[in-house]
Length: 202
Image (cartoon, rainbow, N blue to C red):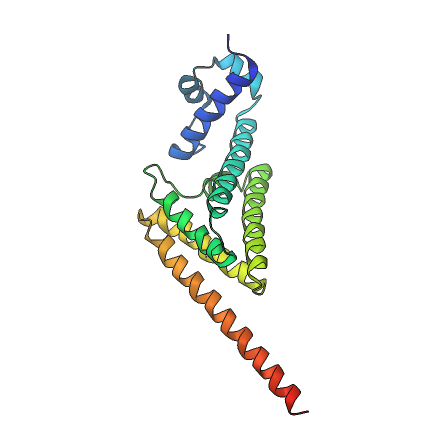
């Protein structure tokens, strides 16, 4: 018999693949049992309800997704490069053959109206991503308002790519992000020059 941790890992792997590919409501516990190879009795010992399994799937997905993004971004040298690397990583993700958009947007669309826990998980993931972008922006020295703008570009690319079936929105969002960063830097130069001119005329 499988030990508890091995059985739990097999169930979560199966659930993640099935929920992401087919949708949460379309997948029953029998399907998870069949894919995982863990008996239904054992499955319910590990996860007393389908909602409990869904929440663990989302928690696991949140951790793996954000870790993979950070690992990729950390390979880039400068703060500006790291910001733009977010969109390069998104392009890689969008290019995966099983890409079906954001698991958190999908789960919120399916269950957000009836499960406050699922809705909270989705909000937590989105806030954590936004906060991550804010940290990258802080390292560039650019204003924090840029973080929300970059976040909207990324979220828009995620949804658009899922609907259109092409990874191209990641490149479009990257270029928009580059232009935004450039515009903020130019605005800073203008503000600095204006301040210097004001000081000289006093």
